[in-house]
Length: 235
Image (tube, rainbow, N blue to C red):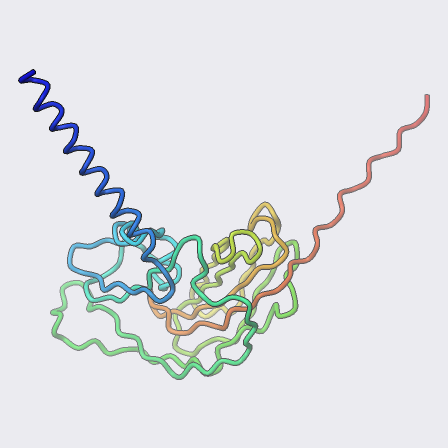
């Protein structure tokens, strides 16, 4: 009996700890969203931050323009979007872009004192817009075109599902340098089933998103019919 009592108390304590952990996990899973932000603290990493908010680090990285998820720095503001929900407002096909010229502050290079001011690059977002596609996606390989943002160092195309798991990220294309086009396969085997998809183009400086085109939602082309079976010849 003397042995059983401490054992039962230990089991009860473990049960309480797991219950508390489950409650905290459930609460954390309800915290992500397009209006939820997190300020990175010293010693934090993107994987653990995303886990605490109940989302996935790859989705947070893509939305915040982080090319390398291992590179975040104290004081950086992250939008904690949900992995299963859209980081943007769907159902609108706004084509105007009123984003002004943008400056981007980067963390100081390794070895440089943090109190040394970093000169931000200037990016002109005023003419940044998608030019194609604008009236529908092809079922095969789709080429995306846009007018560039002078000063940007790279671009990113993000494709989201609209009908199946609305808002889920289904394809990403990173475009380095000054290229203003890229191609992505749009078949079921690549971006999944569904009739409608949405996409946006981001302009980046280093790992920071400085311009984003309005989300454009369109129908995907109906897949081609399977070839008819060859006729069977009578014996």
